[in-house]
Length: 223
Image (cartoon, rainbow, N blue to C red; front, top):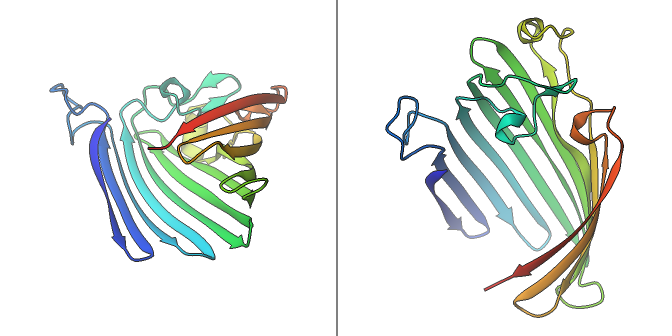
């Protein structure tokens, strides 16, 4: 979307905030900079030699809802799209922490997102993960890392919303599990290559889907 943001540094602490509208340039009803879909975010980050930590809050509105139709990969029960074209408001709460012990790093984080489908009911989304890394492995700037956790999933619905959808009381999605092992290899100060292997159990938060592996390679240019 269209918007603006800023980072305010206060020593080891920074305050990040921003706002973006999905259809800021449209004069149509339900669009524009403040009358249509939007996302607002604020985050406080603390960085030090021993620990990095951050907490964030975001508020979003989408006139079409936060469904797989919009690319959010949420709202799939038994193969059907959920809450399609239903205006929704989301509050997102997140936290992340990373501890550094010499060349080793251990961390993790989580996200909780209660969503209100206007005129229908509520549902809750959770996501959480853990991380392990070894820095400067086989060279300065290199990193071997592992991240594993549960991608965003609907972990519960209000009785009213479940009833409107013909679902059991407090229906929830299956829990997918994702793990990625990667190695960041720094060629020089400006270029790094990161091959990785991703394992996904129950893709799409659906236990009927077969587990899968995905190979990935990323090249990063830093200027």
